[in-house]
Image (tube, rainbow, N blue to C red; front, side):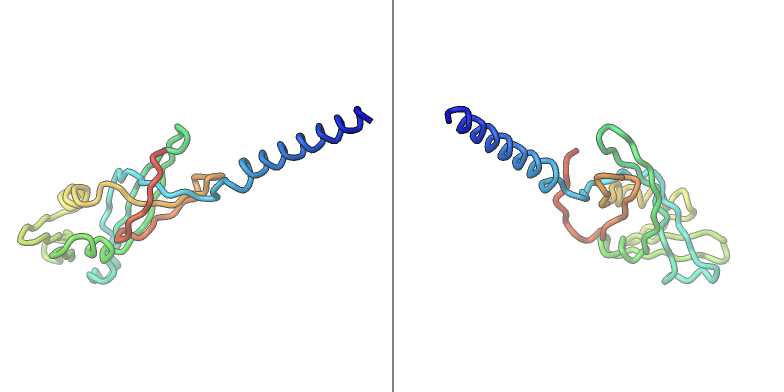
Length: 151
């Protein structure tokens, strides 16, 4: 009789322990996380007819997850960046055959000068990545605030 009670108590203890482990390892894990990725390079991408509405920013970025560095690339519309910074426009000067960035009353001519200025404005990019495969990530809108993990 005493051994039956001991077996039942042992079984219940093991069962409760397994439930706690399942709760901790399966249900509490997030499937994705948000972090800030450091921007390494910005390219200005115009369409063939060089319209301002078709300007995209090609952004190369990197981020670290569990001491491993991941690199990726994305394209975002220039208009997203304009929402962060007032009095900014970009256009392609056909006479110079170079892109021109105007910020307030300052002009930045050429890819390198524009990249330098844009890296001063936008140094990090919010991204969401899968915890199971951080190579699978995508950018988030720039104009929102996110709760960012410090990992």
